[in-house]
Length: 144
Image: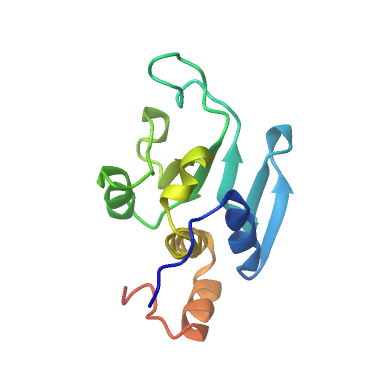
């Protein structure tokens, strides 16, 4: 099996909208927020002081936030040296990881799809998550 192509920012939008019961709503400054059942699972963040270039202090203008299912999932993504995901002190204790749009190509599309799907599963109702997992022949969240 050949690996998928490098991920693109447009893939975040396409993958998020491909999940069931998703609504795209405008966040602050019109940056998109993807929600399932009124709960955000992916959003494009405005530049904030906690996510800035360590040398220049310039705020990153291109941060995407993805929910994760657990702190263990978060730590697996942010501690892997090969992973472009990161976190900041602002997100301590928050079940999410950050990714700069500028680094999205460090993932392939299949890897990004898994992150988006996991974000959706972390925020969808139990009923919706169970139905999606069953439709895709995947074990329920209790079995994962």
